[in-house]
Image 1 (tube, helix red, strand yellow):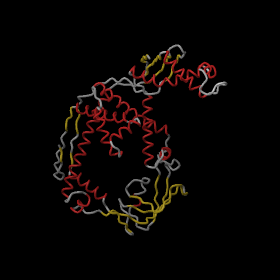
Image 2 (spheres, helix red, strand yellow; image 1 turned 30 degrees about the vertical axis):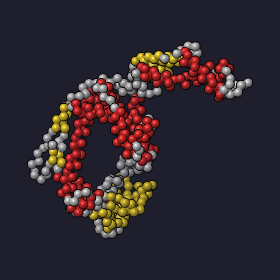
Image 3 (spheres, helix red, strand yellow; image 1 turned 120 degrees about the vertical axis):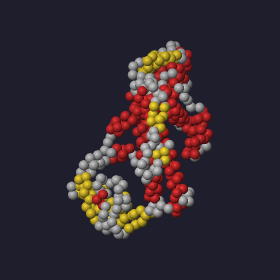
Image 4 (cartoon, helix red, strand yellow; image 1 turned 60 degrees about the vertical axis):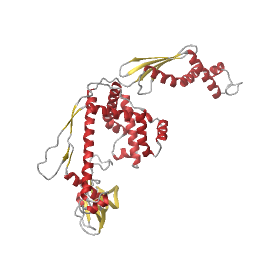
Length: 446
């Protein structure tokens, strides 16, 4: 077999594959046997008719087509490897020359990965934000812990406050008529959560248990139910009861209840360290992002539309999976957002193009810098993944391989290695935290 690839415009090549005549003849003979088993030829049992009669009965074109369909996948993959092209879509057949006794010739137009011309991609000067954790940050985290571990007590009297959970009955009206989905009984609504129409929750503050009130609101212009978008509405609301958080005092007992520490001071010190680690990680991640963004900005490439469309397909598929995990279908989501699949794709297109551009540039840097993934690195990654999938590492590797996902794992490792390389090659300047002159908040910084 011989294969050549001629560059065309717009990241396409003309791939010519020549299969020697003996291999083609063998494929034709196998095709004749297959067709003989499928068709009834008078005077012969299925599969027993000679090739000449099969060809006369089904026609030469059908015989050659069967042979071509069998032989093409293998020779195409071999030609791709031989010419070292990187197809990004199925090939378009331009011409096929097929005649038994002669070489079989394919001419295919193939969209391939674009050529990437790298600009500067290392040695950037990047400022790293100061890592600063204050006593105020620690106090906020303690208050969050208070809220997470708070007890909800039911009030049969009293006034509704911001942060309370209101148990309400309501009926909504537009133009004096009830509308579908605008009615509920004993509905649980956290005041201040922003889950209802803007202005609804605020108007309930101060309402007493057992009281009723008319709430006037306007549906947003982009409301998911198009028939209500922009409409004024009146809700008749009754407050049945109030659930209010009862916060435990911030003391040593609280520390014992919510952590492994015996004192509040030990808990605060631990929170200080964890917050610092978190902010350190965020600062490092910001440096890495900037290093990658600068490398991508300096590269020149033209991304084929097919690659963007493929990435959009993947993004939509992933979105569908996330929605299903939340008990929602894509069609329902589109109805709620009052949009179409085409509008969704248009909205996501810029992100898809950015993702593809970033990956192409990173892959080219890996090629230039000879960065690759070793078997040891792959095995280590799989070993770390194994507990999540409740499988032994060896079994998980076989599972990933059978699903065709092993290469995706390797690509993920490779791109992390490239990002690490670019970060290490950058000239990182650590900025210092501003001095706090108030004396009220002690800062911890590097």
